[in-house]
Image (cartoon, rainbow, N blue to C red; front, side, top):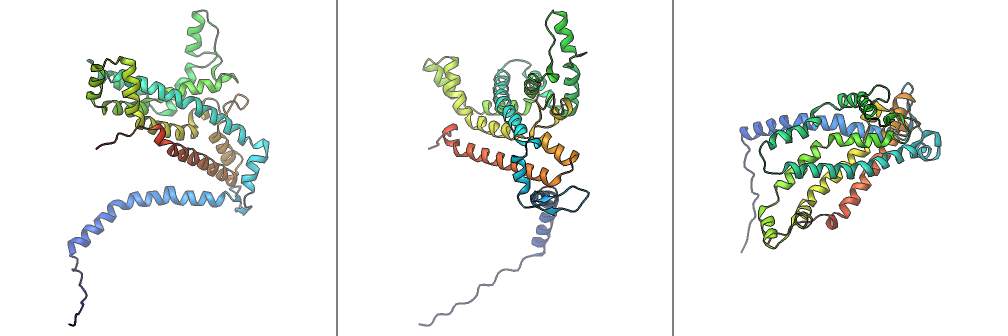
Length: 308
């Protein structure tokens, strides 16, 4: 028996198919072009520049890994010092932000009258531009004529140094970071509202009190949300810049000389774009490693409900 195989011809695509395809590409073009022009190409360019000596006004000169060597071998660049300040800030501000945001979310998750007003009030500071908030806090905490010191003086309490003290400047910025807990609080609130009420009802039937319900139901069910906020909080803390730039500019005596402030100084004051690019990629590597470590231990940190 002889068998023959023939090619199956593809159906001709209609004019409407090509019109829809064209329209689809046109709709996604702004996002794709924006990603390429403002993210991908600059990242590639900064990676190349990190291996060059580029003083902006002159052409880049290839120096290999010299910028990366100089970062950790020349003390006057203060890379390790600024990295230490940033690490201290991250280790302190991130846990405090998580605790404060979770506490606020628990309060705002109560079924009481007027709760929408309180939720709006707690989130309102996030809407205020960060630059405006920094200037307002700078005025309130000014050691000479600030409102906070004026109130302390009236009550016979000693004035605070706040941004002008070497031992108080960084803790003050850490305290101010709690001003922006709004987004983290909203995410926690959404996580709390997604926990089934039946779990709490079952716990109460078994005789569990409020603390036991929190530790055995709320926290495990909320662990994916905590993990997400922890991850984004660490990334944000390592990118901290604006408030320190406006309020302290790295002082006093480099007490608040954050890594991004150091990077800004090298790029726009020293005009060493090659060195600044190398610093940016080191920070990218640090954040990437921390992110991978968190995901590595996510199974131990996060409770995932197994659905049968």
